[in-house]
Length: 74
Image (cartoon, rainbow, N blue to C red; front, side):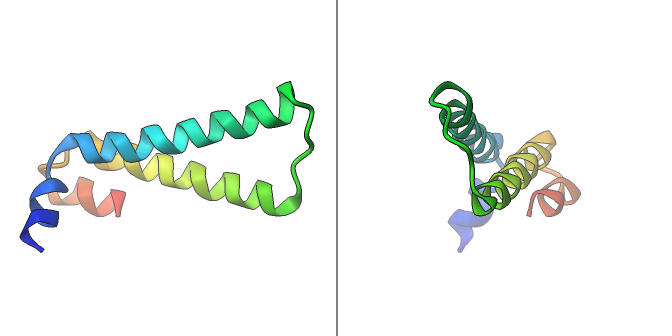
């Protein structure tokens, strides 16, 4: 448990979380516009959730040393 506490106070895991979410969004947009595949309603819900995860990663990366920034990310 102390390892999780220590790693959450660094910026790299938060940025990795945001980066992977942004990559997933880019892939979904590629499927939609380049491959001309229309998303279903569940895909749209999932995209919204992934955008929330990306925002949480960016909020946590603002200043991970401060408790308020980590709590916003969580």
